[in-house]
Amino acid sequence: GENVGLHLPTLSVQEGDNSIINCAYSNSASDYFIWYKQESGKGPQFIIDIRSNMDKRQGQRVTVLLNKTVKHLSLQIAATQPGDSAVYFCAEIIPTGRRALTFGSGTRLQVQP
Amino acid sequence: SAVISQKPSRDICQRGTSLTIQCQVDSQVTMMFWYRQQPGQSLTLIATANQGSEATYESGFVIDKFPISRPNLTFSTLTVSNMSPEDSSIYLCSVDRDTQYFGPGTRLTVL
Image (cartoon, rainbow over the protein chains, first blue to last red):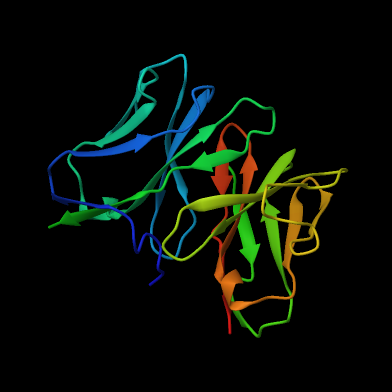
């Protein structure tokens, strides 16, 4: 496999439990945030996004919470499954017009069957 | 969404050589980006590639080392020039559509 996330913090959960992955972002001017999932040997896969005018957004089994006061983003995964095991990255876009992403450091999620 | 392919998927190269990585997207996009992911690390933006203009490089990345082409709205190349072992990374392209989507990456090992 690849060395993606080899030195990243790890969250270990039991199958069926809920997972919460946290991210502190860097720029108070950021107006758009994305969570990505990266499995070994693959590119980042879009999970869910949220704009700065919202504080919560729900998808299928996932919820993203945004706290602009403390520049904090979280990803909640309900009923975590072994297929959720991966490295998760948050990313932010600063409204400069270029729409380039600044990534957080990432968290490895390990789901124990 | 977007369907993005990259070639090659992986390569092992000798130091001092250059490698050109191709990125193809399934339909036209204005903005394409190139990122580097060093072993065990997060992603770092190398440059933004827009069709019809010079690429815009981030701090720490220069055109001589990472020349980029963007000949049309569905294709871009990144060259890693005069490679050293420190260039061993995953190189990823992304496109901006309704959100940002990534290709599968090119895993480069420099010996």
